[in-house]
Length: 122
Image (cartoon, rainbow, N blue to C red; front, side, top):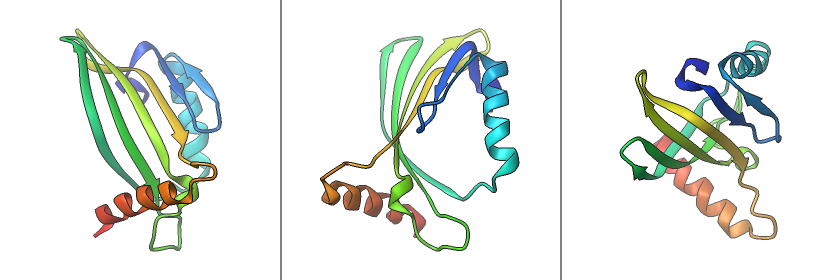
């Protein structure tokens, strides 16, 4: 996946971890996915906005179904923000940020997001 980033692209994980550049992003993702089984992800693109002919912002929501379960676990729901730029290589990721959607004190928003993602499982 690191090849989808620009040379100086940046990844910010839901735990606040940061990786800059393809090599560091590859190493970061390899550590995560090599030692942990990857549960099925469910995602929905909410918006794509072009800021010019060669730059765009994509917003999405995502959740996951933990191993051994049949439903989304709301504690892993997240907002994804991606800034993409067009280069000679095509469209590449300049910034990807994954932020947990915990909605502190607003359980109805957790429920709404979970239900929206759950609809994609059907």
